[in-house]
Amino acid sequence: MDYAATYAAWRADPEGWWAEAAEAITWARRWDRVFDPALGTFGQWFAGGRLNVCANALDRHVAAGNGERTALIWDSPMAGARARFSYAQMRDRTAHLAGALAARGVRAGDRVVIYMPMVPEAVIAMLACARLGAVHSVVFGGFAAAELAKRIEDAAPRAVISASCGLEPGRVVAYKPMLDAAIEMSAHKPEFCLILQRPQQAAALRPGRDEDFQEAAAAAAPHDPVPIAATDPLYVLYTSGTTGKPKGIVRDAGGYAVALQRSMGMIYGLGAGDVFWTASDVGWVVGHSYIVYAPLLAGCTTILYEGKPVGTPDAGAFWRVCAEHGVKVLFTAPTALRAIKQQDPEAALLAGHDLSRFEALYLAGERCDPPTAIWAGEKLRRPVVDHWWQTETGWPITAGFRGLGLFPSKPGTGGRPSPGYDLQALDDAGNVLPRGTSGHLALRLPLPPGCAPTLWNDADGFRRAYLADFPGWYRSGDAGEIDADGDVSVMGRTDDIINVAGHRLSTGAMEEILASHPDVAECAVVGVADALKGQAPLGLVVLKAGSTRAAQELERELVALVRERIGPVAAFRTAHVVPRLPKTRSGKILRASLRRLADGEDPRPPPTIDDPVALDEVAAVIRPRS
Ligand code: COA
Ligand code: AMP
Figure 1: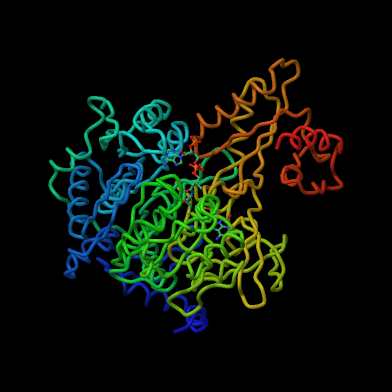
Figure 2: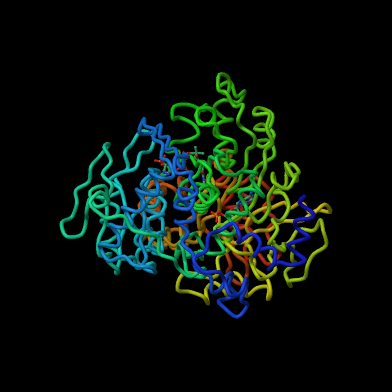
């Protein structure tokens, strides 16, 4: 069936369409209702069904006689190592770790925080939790102790699984001291921690709380998969909201498994035995869905890459990995391509790599600027597909569909809505806009399987953040338009979230940190255009009356403070002291005007600006220095 027919089939009978998709999953108990509108914030999928997602990702492939097929290839230029794990090996490793967790009291529904670099044990840890029905919450390694502490406090895990260190170019990142500090800061204390000792740097273990990951797993009896309700959470993944408090996005088990399994063939055109490489991190949703769960559910070989697009050792690293492991589809963030293009504009490093098995490049995480997409298409001579989604949705809202003959998508767009999503652009009052008109991109409820049903311990927060503005709709927080053909262009966020190197960050969180400095009276953080990272945060601060701090000293301290509190991933490198911040007469800081000003555009202040001179004063500070 082609795209149009498939989309029409879903529209005509959504529940029948999803019930058919659910046949590809192995259930311990079939669902009572495909969709129950009475449950949760907007209804829930596969109510009454029971399954184990780890068993679907590993055991069933082994049971079907495919245990020797490669499940995961670890390729780490950082560690100078490679390793290959068959489905049977992954199943066994995971079962032993699950046994170790169970022996220490972890049960279905308990939370386990995972704070790990890109090593196979991170994937094994996620799957071991899933095997027990425990809820994992992976925290990206680039976050500092205070961010980890917020997540430990909110998720209240029984255990934390971590590693002695991560490896970044030129430095070993000691994870364990950050974990210790985070547990110190958090009011909730985990009962135990399993620590993977990496050869690059060992960590001191705290007696009575910390144990060696490998020893614990080796000593444990393997544990069988524990079926959980389809509507039970598989994981909680924290993502940036508009304030310093991250949002705990809940993913329920059944709908996610069904949607991911369906997406692999329909969107990426991949099936059992194909090699899929998602060059992201297990700490992000892209890593959860397309490094770990979807490829394994579909019986593919997934690649776990601990390295960068450039500098490990050079801008040919991605092509080397694709050639060496026979990658069929690569999924990465546009920023990675911009980094490669910047260092190797002619793609000279492609030469010598056999990309005969490589078929397509998928991009997401931020809007792809057309020159980068065109460059990649020309150099690789393969279709390039930009596709759009969010932590909240768990799988693509719009895409090009290799499995449905709608491929590649129209250049400059993120493709068309995936079957399951009724996407429209709305005006401020919630009316559906005609095609070709830009507005709030919103999804008509119910959201499809795989999308977040709620926020962790905060159903009201979910309703307020996503459902309240436009009754009957989910507000994505992105602006964009749908053209006459139905192709969707995503322009950017309508809130205070920015996207730095494909990493979603909250300017509100950074403002809270700047404002906590004793010399800062008020501040604003805006995302300004950055040639490599897409956006970069820029801080503007006003000194407290009477402060005698030298501007450059304060700026250095503020940069260090954000790095210490949020982590290096914030990439907060610029703060300027300004005399005043431009505001409306009602006292709202004109962040959009500040952003345009920093981008070198006409700041277009609204007529309600209180004091136009304030904007000129900011311009005088940032223009000569940016
Ligand atoms: N653990 C610890 N530190 C980390 C980290 C991790 N897992 N990931 C990133 N960092 C650090 C980096 O070392 C860097 O530190 P520095 O300030 O000391 O240099 C900082 O966080 C900023 O990292 P990043 O924004 O990634 O910039 P970079 O200069 O290291 O690399 C790119 C730039 C474009 C090569 C890189 O951002 C990249 O590969 N991006 C792809 C993003 C991606 O896959 N996103 C997932 C969404 S699909
Ligand atoms: P995250 O939740 O970290 O995946 O970030 C989601 C946000 O990233 C979206 O709301 C968009 O703002 C942005 N984003 C992701 N993919 C795309 C894309 N293909 N085009 C434009 N923006 C994107």
